[in-house]
Image 1 (tube, helix red, strand yellow):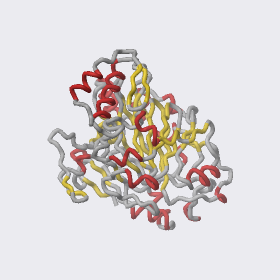
Image 2 (spheres, one colour):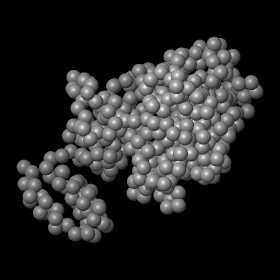
Image 3 (cartoon, one colour):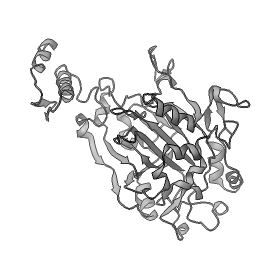
Length: 431
């Protein structure tokens, strides 16, 4: 029988700073009162019967029993053959250290960004993502989703990159960040490692003189500032395309689960994932990555996970459909920014060794043809709508794969009041 709470509190209250304390089966050296308080809470929860790891953040030592280690790390990017035959084939993530230290974007200052891209309009969201309001008032799996009155609604807005940088510089506590399609002009400053080259393309869809060039799907841009001791966070989710993200300021920690093996242990809002075949769509989990509720979802404690952290100059390959959670922060007292660029290619793309003729190790992203064009609200898209680039449209007529991508994957733009005249309400269907 668990001891009375008053007795538990009295015992824990005798701990002193600097003591070695038994915390849920592990011996911690309590160096400061913050750790001491964490230890007290761990012991308190254990004594009253809460599961190990309850209310703890992802990556906490209480979850070490299911940790499968860090993802693979390269100091030099893998060859296309190694990438496609092992990492792509097995849906294994990896990082490449220092992969973009030779890219001009590594030296981006706010002044440079504002001068060259400041007029572009970007999508802005809360720095700490919470998609609960997507489901408020709905009945899912026979249960009504009730949201407290203080639930912060999910909101997308749009502003120019220049205005965002000025506002976030002026007010470090402004809890917003840019998560948007990347202006095409940024591609000339990003030298992308070419391990994903040599993807199969239909004959009429190949780039002249560049048979090795993989068809890219979309490019994204992240920008946020966080005060010391704070961070940006994502939801636990997966995406539908393969991703290559590179860091140009700050750090991002990634925690990942392979749903092919762990799906039965992790609750998802829509349960779109299929272990064999393409999921119906992207999906996210109701679990709070900073306060894991193991009383409500006890099986989650058994889900195996891996992790990695990428910092300025590093790149990450993240396979499509791999569940992940991301924290973003900066340790640099002189630069509180987190800047990342991402390019994506579709899960249907396959390796074609015969295309690997003179494939370069690195290529500026501006050289690639990308199916989806400038982001909604940009200078090139005044109607606030996504679009397939004209070159992509011509090729779509000749390529069954491209036609599938262009016609069967609807995209939405949540412009709200920021949409110029001519858009079609809050949600704009783009095809």
